[in-house]
Amino acid sequence: MDVYEELLRLRNLGQKCALATIVDVRGSIPSYESAKLLVREDGSMTGTIGGGCVEAEVWNAAREVIETEKPKHLTFNLGQDAAYDNGLICGGQLDVFVEPVLPIPHAFIFGAGHISKSLSKVATLAGFATVVIDNREAFANRERFPEAAEVHAEEYEEVFPKLVVNESSYVIIVTRGHRDDMRVLKLAMATQARYISMIGSKRKVINVIRELEREGMPREAFERIHAPMGLDIGAISPEEIAISVAAEMIAVRRSAASNWRALSMSVYAGGAIPAVLLK
Image (cartoon, rainbow, N blue to C red; front, side, top):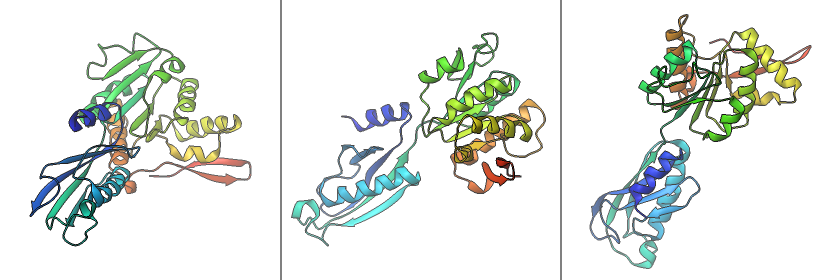
């Protein structure tokens, strides 16, 4: 299996992987400079950098790189341990660079109103593949969203099973009403999406979550929700709101934890009430 073809296939599926490459060779080694090993999220591999203990250590490093999304540089001295290369001492040294290969993040925008129209453009410029979903064909169409990767004019419950929502996905809920927001939120909470946000005032957010609590959703689940959505930059217009949401998505993507927040739960006399942290 070709390493590059497999890398592209995994990326298109929205799956992370790590690519290990021999970037420098000094002396004799059981492989060659530029040899590559691709490690998938499930630990399976394709390609090789020579086998033996070196490859085993690189595999361990690759799993860490996939988890942290940060590259690693490794150096091996094959003359130090006869265990390398199945007991044969080659005497050389090699450097291996292990880099994360991340899928293009998808932003699933539920609702195709004015904010969504601006958000799709801004998020696309920021490197997200946008997917717009609305149950109104007059709003969810190519004329309004020419830059979007996909546009779906279907009921939310019907289209959701068709979407590939995983750990590299961002879900933004900006439908036209409270009931539709709650419908989508329940669907989104059942996924592993990296980011889930919902439009609305703090009062609206509290009301939505109270209702979901009454339906049996555990309070800890709400810690994943970014609501009201977007960083607090004083945004008023649809364009400004879109920029604030895209900025929050970037902060999550780059793990800039100090720049974003989610809901936390506080216990009041009347029961569990979500307290939206002030930005």
